[in-house]
Structures are given as structure tokens and as C-alpha cells.
Image (cartoon, rainbow, N blue to C red):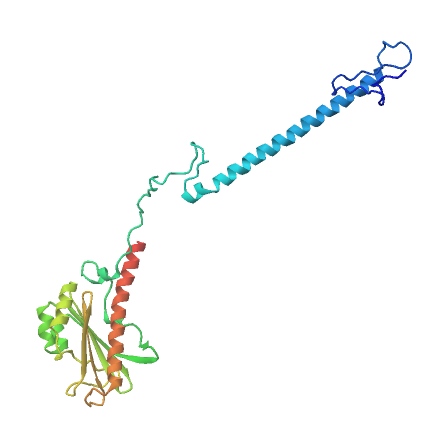
Length: 293
């Protein structure tokens, strides 16, 4: 006698198949269960359930990953192009476009001192002054040209060391001191005269009133022969701060200076430039000392 459907193979119990028959022990009492078969069937059910749980977890993970990917695409899509991300939480720390710009405390560093201020008035221009401090050493170099230093002079009677129309100008504008120095190069001699005033305004006025007949007297001595006593010489006039400065250039041979005498013109221009630099350095030195003190 066999168990199963007629005309087919013996029926096997399948716990997942409806109307299937449980197997029973073929030996002994027909009502006694086959415990080995039941245990095997139970293990089969547990394995299938675990497989279903694992499969479900994979599906859930894939679904979550898909949702995250969609969120990333959304965040990097049109919202990014508009400059307003829609996925930033309300409590985010990104400042809005209307956020107030940061403010900074004003700096406590003082503005740099202007060197010219220290040579523009008697009150601030207090450093020692003499022909030797303004024109130190025994020579000077401008470019590749070396000029030898001659005699120096210093007087408070400005008009006494000037010539032509300059004495009147210096007196009217209240010149307080006139410093002179002579430099030579070959047969050319240049006397520089620096007129000192109490204010920049007075020096500027003296510069404006001087003309082509205004000159400082040529200073000879200390190896330099007299020059420009009767010959035609070249003169220049300028000012910086409370100082007006002049040059008188001539030949120690006594000949006249003409417009073609480039050596004489160059010497006068070099000495005028050097004088300007020395006056400016005086202001710079006093400004640096004041800033450091």
C-alpha cells in the first residue's frame, strides 16, 4: 500500500504546500509521528524564513540607497543653479545674503610723519644747522662725477653775501641766515647759497621774486681761485620747505659761461640737486627721530 495520489509518485509533505500530508514513521504504530522528518521540515522552514528576511533587508537597503541618490541629484540640480539649496535645514549656519558685514575696530597706528613738515617751519626744524652739517665731508659724487669741496661760510646778514637783485629780496622776505659752500671740478667752480627763513611761505616768496640778476656771491678760498667777479656766470634759484637755495657757476680761468658750456651747466645742476637732497634728508632724519621718540 502506498501513500500519495493515485497514478503518481508518492506524496511528500510540504509545509508550504496546501493539503500536503505529514509523513509518519513507516514502521510501528501508524499514529506515531516521524520526529526526524519533522525536525528536518522545521529546519527547512527556518532556513527559508531567514532567506526571506535577508532578501527583504537587501531590498530595503537598495530602496534607501535609491532615495539618498535621488536626494543628492535634487540638491545638485536646479536648486544649486539658483544659489538657494532647498535641503539645508532651517537651523543651518549658512548666513543669508542680507547678513551684516563684519565691523573692525579702527587701527591705533598713527599716520606716518611727513618729513617736509619738519623743514617747513622754524618751530619744528630744530636740528643743528651749519654749512658743515648740510655739506659734510671733503667731496661729493653725483653719478660718476666727483666734486671737491672748497671753502664754506655762514652769516646772519644775508644781504652781505648776495649780489645783483638778491640782497633786496632776502631782506624783504626776512632771511635769517645764509650758508655758502664752493665745489670744483676741473676748471669749473660752483658756489651754493642756502637762505634760511622762518616759514615755507617766506622761502617760496623769495624764490618767486628772484630773477636772472639774483645771485649769491661766489666764494673763493681753500684752493679755489676767485671766479665770477667780472665774468658772466650761470645762476639757478629754487626752494624747498623754509629754505631757498641758489647756485653761481663759473670758470676759475675768468672766462664767460655761454649756453654751449655743457660742463658748467651740468656742474650747476648737479650741485642744485645735491642741495635739494640734503635739505630733504634733514627733514627725513627729524621725522624718523620724532617717530622713534
